[in-house]
Structure formats: structure tokens, C-alpha cells
Image (tube, rainbow, N blue to C red; front, top):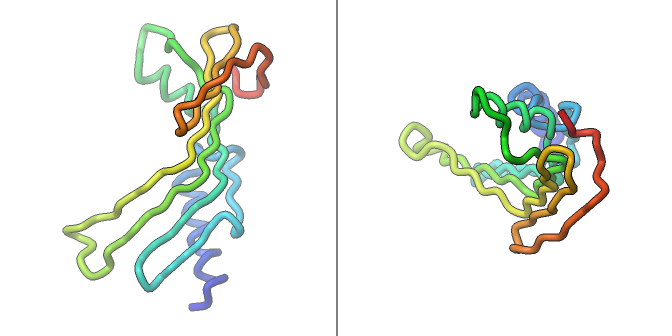
Length: 131
């Protein structure tokens, strides 16, 4: 199977599986990299759906509002590694790198958090992810 055809198949399946987690369920072929010989797939530059993440937070705390809400979340890379020779025992390993999140409480400003342990305060935020 050609690489482009395989990437289209993966893109279709991933849109179905990850749809609610990705902004507008959008995933492009350019964001998918495959190395079929060693069973590695990488997704890059993924913008997560803040409304869906916030809904999951609310459902996880019935009866109480979550302390924070997501305003913007971008994941630089999600890598999945499959051991085809022993998939039933080894399963699939996932590696996530480069997460940047803009979080805030109620109607206050937000704090940007990234995986380099850096943070900075934002007093004006994009309200597109509010609930």
C-alpha cells in the first residue's frame, strides 16, 4: 500500500476515534507521519477541543464546578508505537511531547502552561473555548 493511501486510511480512522478531542474534528494528511516498518505513527500540531475537555472535567466532578477550564491546548507531537510481532502482549505505547495549555478559572485571566515548566499570565483570552 502506498504511503499516501495508508495515511488517508489512518486519517479517516483517527478522525472517527479522536474527533471530539480535536478542534472541529480536523486532522490533515500533513499532520500524520508513518513508519510502517517499525510500527510508528506520529501526529503533529494537534489543537485540542477545549469545549470537549471542559465538558469532561465537568462530568468528572458531578455537583461541583471544575477549578480550571481550558482556553487553548496544543500538542506538538503524539507518537504511537505498535509492536506488530507481539501486539496482544505488548499493546500500543503512546508518547506525548510539547503540550502547551492556556487555562483559567471562571471569568478571570488565564495562565499559559507548557512542558518546559514555563508559565505566563494572560489577562485577555480568546473566549471561543468558554462554557
